[in-house]
Length: 173
Image (cartoon, rainbow, N blue to C red; front, side, top):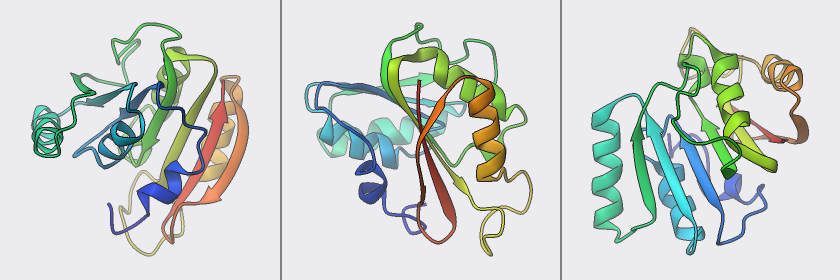
């Protein structure tokens, strides 16, 4: 994914303080988790994924880079309270490139909202509907994502192109 978008450029769209508590939903190998952990020197990053091998890869990468503020959680984000995190706990939730894979896209965004503090930031990065590369099935447009978030009471703060194939949507709880 790192070749498809610039993680640092995307993170620069956020208001980040080094004491924040954040989570990357569907962290995979953790490109956002690693970059965020380096910025949140006094904070914490939770890497959440449904696949143990992805979490293991993230732990190994963090160890190699001497990063100690990442906690991994094996979970199903499409289930009610699937992250296992408590209500209103996080300052920031990243949902990068997982909505297209999910059957219950709304459940993932709803879980992000549940674990955010009031005023917290929720960032969705996903495949543009018309991108020539990437998955053929399951893509959710920026408009569909905005409609889900609006139904859940999230407020759109910023919409941007996250590279040639992805959109970015920043919401505030």
